[in-house]
Image 1 (cartoon, rainbow, N blue to C red):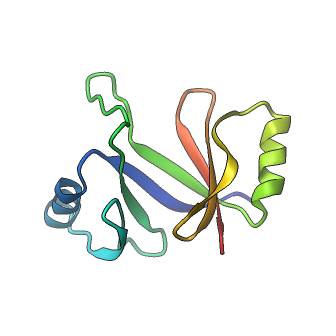
Image 2 (image 1 turned 90 degrees about the vertical axis):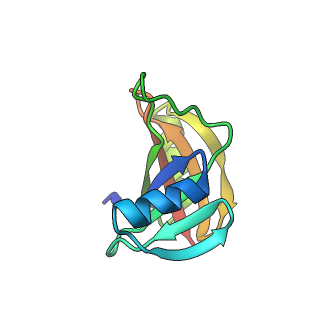
Length: 119
């Protein structure tokens, strides 16, 4: 069964993002992994803010910086499964991140999704 484990939001400026999500929306900073990755308190489903300098942010074209992260117990098996379905990978090789390893891909409509395996 596929389970959503993280909602990631790409932001162009971490300081402004923290200010908006805490002051305007009332979230609290849970943990700062680095100056570019911060988690917010949001019940059992964490929200991760990640500063991306080269990400396209375009309100007119409705470009989204929201990433849905799905949990997997075996990231290599998940990669193989996605390859069988000719998925459009952004990051195909399991890559280290603060909580474990991840891969990134697009759905048929261009939306970014990730699979995350926790350490």
